Amino acid sequence: RRQRNKEGMSLDYLRSPVVCVLGHVDTGKTKILDKIRHTNVQDGEAGGITQQIGATFVPEDAIRAQTKMVKEFVKTEIKLPGLLIIDTPGHESFSNLRSRGSSMCDLAILVVDIMHGLEPQTLESLGLLRKGNTPFVVALNKIDRLFDWRRMPTSSVKEAVKKQNKNTKDEFDERVKGVVTEFAEQGLNVALFWEKVDFTDYVPLVPTSAHTGDGMGDLISLLVTYSQGVLAPKLMLSEELEAIVLEVKVIAGLGTTVDVILRNGILKEGDTLVLTGTEGPFSTQARALLMPQPLRELRVKNAYVNHKAIIASQGVKITGKDLEKTLAGTPIFVAKKPDEIEVLKDEASKVVSSMLSAIKLQERGVYVQASTLGSLEALLAFLKQSKIPYCGVNIGPVHKRDVMKASVMLEHDSQWAVILAFDVKVEREAQEIADNVGVKIFTADIIYHLFDNFLLHRKELHDRQRRQHEAMAIFPCKLRILPNCVFNTRDPIVVGVVVEAGLIKKGTVLTIPSKSFVDVGVVSSLEVNHKQVDIAHKGVEVCIKIEPTGGEAPKLYGRHFDHTDLLVSKVTRESIDAVKKYFREDLQKGDWQLFIELKKIFQII
Ligand code: GDP
Image (cartoon, rainbow, N blue to C red; front, side, top):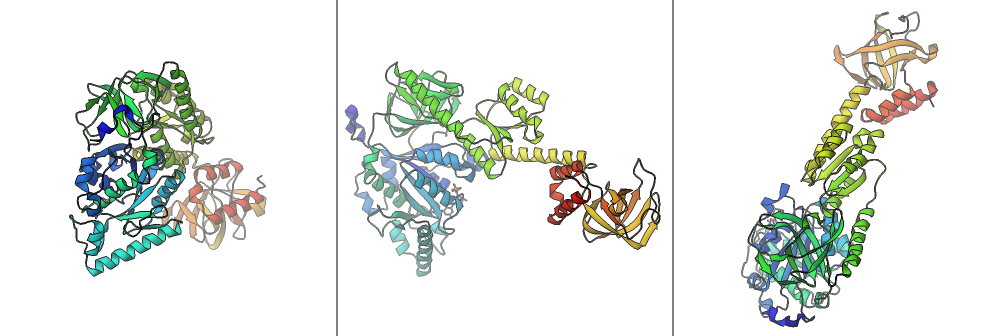
């Protein structure tokens, strides 16, 4: 076996390519991975969404077993130890995590649903691949959904297509043509992999069904052929270690361990590692290097096998002292000599500070805290998309200093005095201070829950503020009295009016600009067609009851004013501000226009 070739760690050894799977949600990324590893992790995931990157190693014998139907490939010598497939999160809120994952990738599978063609995240993924200069193949998935598709487990997908009924074949051709055109519109040449031999100009398109398995063998054999052909120079094993921490986990009997993708180099038991922690870089010894059985994912519980040395590419679990401090998403360095430790620590801290300082903060917004850089980025991407600003970020448990930072918002706008804590602990002291000063801390380990709780809180806060400012917030309105609908002329005045502009609600003080701004009184009830209402809009005829305002003598209809006078709501700077702040959603465009008009009438600057 290949192991023997690498005696003496010769550098002509090809490592396994790190492969990642990208594409729009629901195109079948998880299912393709499941098909490859014959397991089903989909059901066990939090909320059905993969929140961390996991990896699957597909060794040579598994490659052979899964490509038996591809006659051309059976004769091909496999020069790679296998494929290391990273299980990239599929949901759109993970675009940044995807970018982190894909920067580790040698080769990608871009999954497109043959029934849907290119979708928003297909384009987003395409952008990432182009940015990272990552070569990729397109899996045109769900071909079994073509009309009358018959599965052919013993055929290559080219033969399988050929053997379908004419209708099915026609639909296939048409849909492929559509996808090819859509890619061309993105400036990309793609072609069915059996139509082109040279893939320097064309991106190969592999029809697949993760459901029936058709094309899966072709996909795997293409990945192998491509890797050991065009990609070979990039897959040479280097002496430099290239590794990234995916997850930090406590395992019974092992203590805190880190799950690592070793992309290049050789990791040995006892190596001095330099890692990035929540409190800064630190060094520790790799006590044990563990690997699960092939074809199992790191996250699936199983017995681990101890290794003296691990050669890239692999997913590795490392045990050692102090690992609980490690920040997921950061690189691992190995110090060959003791004096290298400090240098590497410098390098490590640069990586994180550059990652954190690259995050653009707003002056006002929520405070965001997450367990890993990846999940922090994912959460931020989600907030950005939802137009929720953030003013601070941090990684690791919520400490007192985080609460203090978040509490600054209390001076501005209490809706932002919030910490969104994703998958992290909140220190007791921090929680106590938060409760005292009035900072809300939301914790959850599913982004959506965190987000929903925050939105709910914000709505409650908003509703409460509306109730508090109800009396202050006077809506703009212009009322015309209907002369034959005067039911009572004084204390209270009861008249029918038509709303000429704006909107009238209970509590509005009415005044008459034409009579040197005499206050008529305050509207205490409204009726439309003998039914009590809270608000009446432009054009509505409404019967209103007007009570005297506290300070002034009651006004009389017929004496102080009559139907020739226009009644308007008495607005002030404060009332306008209150409406703007808490009742914005109640007003329409024309109503704001009336505000401007009233501001002129009342000479409000
Ligand atoms: P992801 O969001 O891209 O990871 O998509 P999933 O793997 O979760 O698949 C989304 C849905 O499509 C699931 O219901 C799958 O069972 C289904 N699906 C995935 N691949 C195929 C396929 O090749 N054929 C059919 N018919 N359904 C598929």
